[in-house]
Each structure stands twice: as structure tokens, then as C-alpha cells.
Amino acid sequence: MFEHPKGSGKYSYSAILVHIHFHVPAYAYREEQAEFRELVSSTGIEVIRTIAGRRQAPHPKYFIGRGKVDEIRGRVDAEQANLVVFNHDLSPAQARNLEQSLQCRVLDRTELILDIFSQRARSHEGKLQVELAQLQHLSTRLVRGWSHLERQKGGIGLRGPGETQLETDRRLIGNRIRQLHKRLGRVRKQRHQSRRSRHKAQVPTISLVGYTNAGKSTLFNRLTTAQVLADSRLFATLDPTLRRLRLAMVRPLVLADTVGFIRNLPHDLVEAFRSTLEETRDAALLLHVVDASSEERQVLIAQVNRVLQTIGAEEVPQLEIYNKIDQIENCQPRLERDASGRICRVWLSAASGEGIELLRQALAEYFPAKETVVNSQQAIRAC
Image (spheres, rainbow, N blue to C red):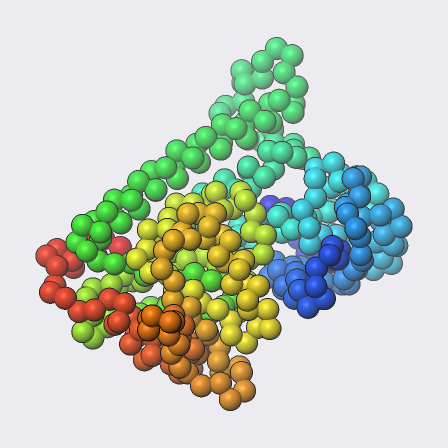
């Protein structure tokens, strides 16, 4: 998303963070600020200082007031920082005005998250999805030249009479976006065929969803004995993973681990990862993993449900998994049922294994044993 300069030190960028308070409760402001610092640290950027402030509304030219711009400029000069990161989305004009005034690179929240995704993507599909999201976001700004893309088409004859460099850049980016859409369309078709095979063989898919760093991958590994990367960093897992779920006296199941959600997840990322998130939309059950130790867990649950609504998965049945009870004093694993007697919540610790058997019990109630369906094993192998 942005170039990391080579250097001899541990960090290639040293940053001043900017977080402005816009009419949110104090506890939510603290949580947002802590998450922001974790996001920045996830990229390998050295955090020098966080500058906070309050505003009624964003300034049209700088997003922040002129006095705050002068304060940040003074800190940039004093600390020798080479990057300023905003925990807000900036318009192209605001970003350019800030870079001119601060005389250093300015990054907004969307660009920061896109950079994290670009570092985490490992599979071919994941890389295509991240590149598409980056190009869709950058097509509205074009602060830097993209003429190097001409080499993909030969260069000669590309520029028409009177065509400006900006028009050339836009056309080159548009061509690349169309290519990525075609490639991801083929991936989406393959995923659809796999889901159709599982549906035909009556093999239900259970999808893990939740806020990033809630412990989804740890729970996935615990249930399936898989070796998916489980890391405390935000967005440690991007690429979806499907595995057979073996439960005694339960019909064949498939468990899917998906990308974690976050506050204000960039729209371009939601669109780019739509083929991946379709596994969630078409699931028979969602295991909504919640960090039970977080004071803001209800807000995080609402954030996840908002993304599920965006991708059309709000009607899929949910079983809430309150994870990390080992970090709560005197909290024991347990099941909770709704008014109709259906299990609606499981309290457990994926890290220690406490309460895992209760989750298996809950899944056995959701998916009671039945006669083995013909060709079910072949459908599972298609995952």
C-alpha cells in the first residue's frame, strides 16, 4: 500500500498517530485508540506518539483544525517522524493538504488496513483480493504515478492524442481492475461448485465469524486438529480454511475459518473478499466467536453483525461462543439457552480447552445424527 524504505534500524517508519474524538462514549474512545495502536504496530511501524483531540465535525481542508496541524508539524520535526497515521478516513484533498503542510507521508485508516492485508495475504486468491481492494481505493486518489503499469501492455501506442498522464493512469488501473474481477470470478465459480457439491450431499458447513483477534483460529485448531496460524496480531488469518469436523454421533460437518472483522471495515475490502465471505452467507450455522474478557464485547458483537448484514448473512442462525474465559476471574465454562430451550451461547476457552466438550454437545443438538448420506465423503474431500 505504501513503500517501506530500507534502513539499518528495526523500524523503517516512525509515526505520529492522530485520533480525534467525535461524539463517542469515553470507554469506546479508549477502546478505539487501543485498537488503532495495535493496528499500526501490526505493520511494523514504530509508534512515537499519539496526538488526540476533540472536534464537532471534520475540517473540510485538513480534517483537523489549523492549530492541530501546527502541533503535529512541530512533533514531526522534533521527533524526526517520517509518517503521520490518522485513525479516520481522509478525502484525497485532505490527504494532499496534510502532506503539503506536514512535509511527510500521511496515511489514513483505510490505507493502513489495506497495508496490513497486503502483508498477511499468502494464497493466490488472497493476494488477488487485496490487490483489487487497493486499486479500487487508490483509483480515487492517484497521488503517485502509475505509469509503470504500462509495461504490462507494452507501453507503445497506449497513450492517445492529447491524453493526459492522469487519464492514462486511470485507464491502466481500470484495465487491471477488470482483469482481477475476471480472475476472482473464476475463483468464485469454483467455490460455488464446491458448496453445491456439499449441499447436494447434505453436508452442512459451519462458519467461524467474529471480531479480529477473538480467537477464531485457535478454536478452529482445537476442533479440527488443524495447524492454522493462531497469532495475537490483528488479521493474522486472511485466507479461508475448510476442514472436516469429526464429532461422535453427528453427521458429517465442514468447519470454515474466515477473516476477522473490525470497526469500520473498508467497503473496498468487503467487496474484494466477497467470494471468501460467501462461505459465511451460505453456512448452515455461524459460530460467532466473542472475546468474553473485553469490556466492549457488546459493541464488538454489533460491529460483526453489521458486516454480516452487509454480505447478506444476517439470517443465518448463530451460536455465540464466549471465548477467553481463562482471562476472567472465577468464570466457568457453561451453556446458556434461550426461552425456547435452544442453546444460544457457550462459554469456553479455546486456548486451554475448557468448555470445548460443551461446544461439541451444542453442535450435536444442532446437527443430530442421521444416516450417512451417499457421496458425503467425496463432497468433504472437495473442500
